Length: 536
Image (tube, rainbow, N blue to C red; front, side, top):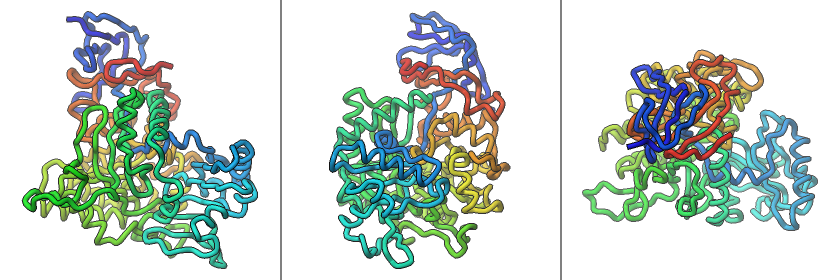
């Protein structure tokens, strides 16, 4: 029997072996699997001319539909507030009458302040304007939208959120955390066809960056979901051949409800029919339940045990009642779900770890791999505790570069090394994945690896350099580490006989190139399930 495809004259970094450093010169593929790591007879042979082959990259925490939607919105990653207003004015001048002006990606740490409602009214007169912060944890709307919400002149109380006001008590347009849900009745749900378009747009970018699989970090409800039937959009995309990569879907905890199952089943919380983590196949499946415990570090809304360095007296806040959040995690675990709890501040991480410990004590389950999404500002004792509990921290290396200057201001130099750790996690015996939280930051995996290794902000400042890791370790995080976080290491994450033939072909080796040059490595082609699905 011949292989379908033989890739030869390559440096194939399999990530197998005790040190994940095994290298071979060829890989043979039959159908969607690797069948040999040597030269064998094949129907098609491709000489790679010395290029590097790695497992396909996996982003363990991204927002695929959100990112795809943002590609059609005004890009607010601009250097100044004036440039932001100019971008809004340009779109307003071009857009059809009555169309909302929607922008995404602004960061007040870079442009000096949040946009102001009155200035937005001047930039886009007569329009509804909705600008999304890069973190996703806040947004700004203008006067007409505030009027539609009934809060143009006075705020309302929102549990777990804030309608920000000026000194006179007038709303500024800034809506933080759960206050963003005030917009839901005006903007949700998105049509399934719109979401299919967004998913396909995002996936095309992913393939060009060597990504062959991703975890979508929240669908179906809450401020993160785009539609109560969001899973249907991913199913339709797959049915139409428009789902470019493998996808694991986190279900927003908001859509879980009490189940009338038999009391002996311990199915107290879930989706209808008892659907839970694991349903699906290698192309599309249900993953963990996503539970938000707090907010954003650069937005100063994450729950901390000590004050932010640049805003004394402020420590952020939880997204809800602490006892209710803890109960939600415990009951989800009891009902068979893996839990992916968003926790950035160390106070929120304490809450999540307490809940996981209680859940395992009361309803033990082996090798669950509950996750702490971000694990953003983690004390040394929390690293050790996560390891003892078998929890998977899911940090974002690219945060250090793209929003690291804002993180440094929020934390100060003493706590900078607590932010989005990797070295300490590896030393504690944990298996952290690689992830981006795209579109919060640029999600290109090689840029994420670059920042994991170099630990420099885009402004050139060191940000916890003691947490830097090596190039091979960063590559392993974005492949085997991410597969492990999804309980998928049996089928992907390394290049081995019997595993899926999901591969990235690169111009250089992240494990051996000068650390300063990792972000400059080019993706030459991407192979998914044995098919070349993208070429430069």
